[in-house]
Image (cartoon, rainbow, N blue to C red; front, side, top):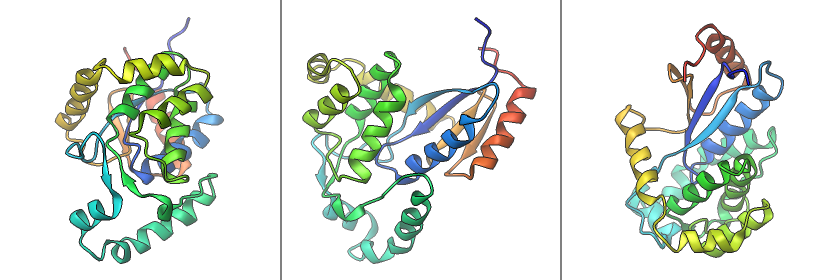
Length: 218
């Protein structure tokens, strides 16, 4: 098989609304690209100090952004809601009641990518949190997502109950932090240059052309 000359690593966190928007923008650009890029989701946790069981969303936001966090973030959320409509996203921030720890969601995505179900699972996790307000740190929620994507839900439940890949995911997150990544989404092209943030599809189309000049050697 001929090597795909464009390899993209998407460093993202499921609790980040800009990551979902950025992924959808990238996906729109990639849909018509020739050759089609190969993309791999990579884990990141914006706040690894969140307890494994998560915590109350309002309390978390108040502690992080102040008691007026809702008013302070109003403009940003309105921009996200408007931008999301163009990509089939219906952000529903008022539905979110828990700030989850996203480690287990990243573990599920890692396993699903090994089963060629990464895109479907990633979309489902993003949607569950940002549209439906579900706790994506909850095992039952993740097992349902796995089942709906055609994976073995009971096997996923068993894996989540153990420590399989926890350390590997955490080490990968630290690797990207060590590269200087402090904000997501970050799209790394052929391990050589990055497109950061939620960007218009045209920016990714230009990145595809640049990447073709410097193919991945991996």
